[in-house]
Length: 410
Image 1 (cartoon, one colour):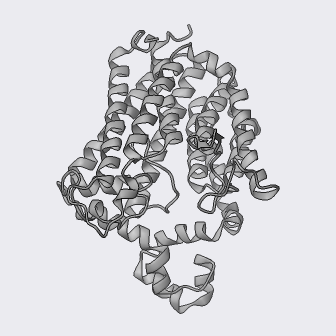
Image 2 (spheres, helix red, strand yellow):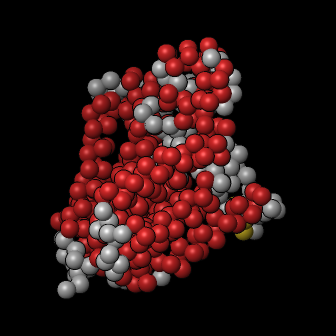
Image 3 (cartoon, helix red, strand yellow):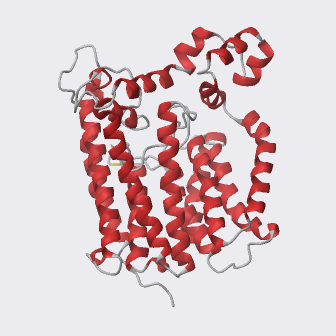
């Protein structure tokens, strides 16, 4: 049962697991704080979040079992079934789109205007929702690593067709849900793994240029609220807002409709402005645990999941955020060390893919919180509330630990 304690690179793997446990503990404590402020206000609605920390503890307990399962056999066996895992996830994504476009399925309902979750009931009781797009991240990394492991010639553009097909198919399905955050995550993972597999940098740059050229088509296919989320980052500039208000054509191109400052403040920019206020008000040391107006009042929507970094900054300030990001640096450093110490192509690619997935997710989440990137709904790994996100993140660490402890191929 405790095979994960044995094997090579014990110090590296200990640091990896310790940093992961610390992040999970920080997440549970922060979720608890927003549901139980030290000085609750009758005007606030923090009671809606009262039991979320308990659910997160249950998710963490299940995640520990998943971690053990990820270390139960040699990681190469997971590679052997990776295509089946990938296919099953694609089937779940297809079920969501069937519910959206063909027939309304009771176990794949619309939630908050999107079709992202599969929900089942047993004896009238709802089971925890499953988010296939979250599971897809890990299934995609496994399948891509297995595909790239022995394909030694990635010096030609034509050889890149297979990896891009593996990437674009789930991207299209996820974008139609719609889930912009996961879509933004997958292309950087592909580029990192292709680079490690030996693809030429100039070929990758050509593909980036092609992606830029087709971006107007992607923009035209986006939902209106997705365009406004992206536009909100640009509209932080008072000069751009002024131009959008003065020139109807510029306004329609930027946000897809007529722009007004009132609409910007009340809708498009509200969440972004509040998030930046929460981060800035924390200062160097923050208000302290369970303290501060953004904990006491409902000033910030989704402060227990998508915007949990803003709450951490509000409570613990700059130094607390620095410590939090330091834990992610430890995980990334340990993951890269595991990749470098492994001569098995599949193990190395799997480790790089997992590290890339977690790194990009942290960068996107923190950047959207402070207004550097659009709001995408991408969670902060190990910290944000959510069962699917936590289970997938911990399973990824379990596989990373598995790669580190197993002897590489000679």
